[in-house]
Length: 405
Ligand code: AMP
Ligand code: MG
Image (cartoon, rainbow, N blue to C red; front, top):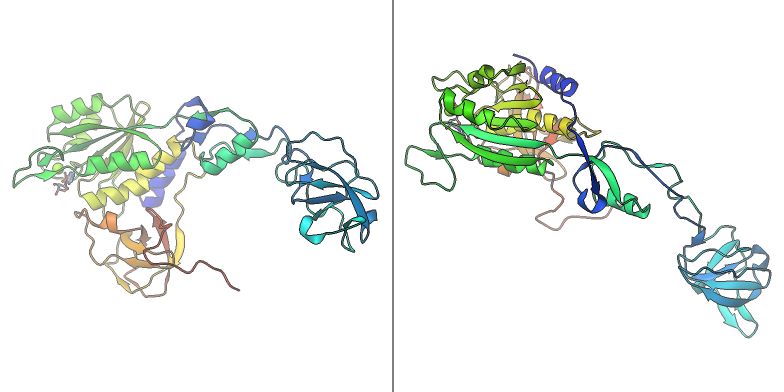
């Protein structure tokens, strides 16, 4: 048996990223970049106007100018600004030679003599300088960054069409248990639906994997071994059930017989102690317990960490949110204990009803905390570290949006 910290250390020092492929930017969303991408040119590409106004010299401050033909964004103009001669300019247009500043239209007035400028003209006012956003050669995407909408902005603003990405890890999931039926089958009074495998398929996809469901096995060595053999072309196999000391628990034995090297067997965690991680060749294996809530929290901690490494992420470690507990929490000391709870953006509230065999807590919870063995009471107001499952970006009731200091 290992501690949670030892188990995570073993994962992070052993699991390496999958192979790479080249995809167009349009197909890269949700993938992880396998290379640093550098800016090919400065952005802005040229000094340009931040306002609709007049490009003028400082020498004309407080005076009157005549305006030459307007320069629009996209114009390749050769007009020059000289004393007494400004240029009307639109946002995004190239700053003409000789201009020191752009005076917004609303700060000028028209007279018989021309355009009247304000008393002060500050050098560089309303001019966006070449390279002030991104300098040529700067890193715009790092190896290990996930490509999201704003990474797409970086790439397309530089005219980058293709990039090298880590493939999506291939995950196979199967459940073991004589009592299990598939959700599309008839279920007898003494049977239950297999909800774990569909859950881990869905969650693996949410975490950026290609996941496939290979079925349910009976509690026999033959049937489990057959299922394993059919999944060995995956990067990761996730199983649930059959890992305890029950008379029908054959999952681990089946993997051992097919040559599984163990990374760790059993973790000092409540719930989910039987969780085992190993590999056969280059395929990683996570054996989770059958109890749905126990399986899910161990998936979140261990399988997610493996997935983050397989994906090549440059932020592979789980990152807790520091918040506080809204209410007192009493628990049994002696183990690292996982407590699921609600998080509304301000504080953590343990779910009143949670047990390893339940299916409802994972839907209700936004995250979980892991206590250390000596903790038996967390008073309301204590700081806690919550590992998020899915953080709310929306609110049921209209929320206060403004910061006032
Ligand atoms: P096991 O780890 O196989 O002893 O199973 C522990 C508990 O989890 C038992 O009550 C099982 O019926 C339940 N269970 C096992 N596998 C699943 C599954 N795939 N979906 C839902 N419940 C399961
Ligand atoms: Mg079982």
